[in-house]
Length: 196
Figure 1: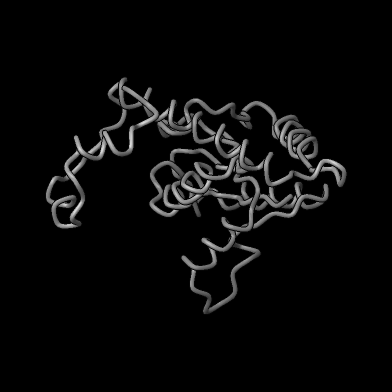
Figure 2 (figure 1 turned 45 degrees about the vertical axis):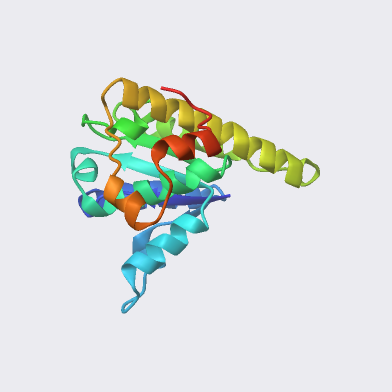
């Protein structure tokens, strides 16, 4: 199990404290402070860290939700989570802030009242999800989980679109330039499984 610690640089002291506690309990943690060396390509290393992680802990604070880097990390991981059912995001609230729309339906851990109790909840969650050797996923179970995940995320995306929280922008010029059939032809040829 590998955890990616996403945080604002202003919240670094908290992020390092959390990473150290997780590591002391046998959880591998990717955190920029410990993973980057002078001269590294930051974007590339972050992408590698996200790709190699099973879980992302999103440290949520006013600083984090306004950080371009932190939101980029979460966006990369969310894109991966759409195609891999095993990818998980754990929002970790450290102060009152405006939680991003795509994280509002996630069960989060609240560090505000008690750091030790919140860490205990994360450890319990992570340790209960470690795969057992006899419980290795088969290609069929992975495919089934992927389909279930795509259906779930498709449903959530539809809800956010219907509720006006997201806007879907399509450009006819793009499809014409790409020599794609009209939308009506495409819908007949490739029916959309989700109807709004």
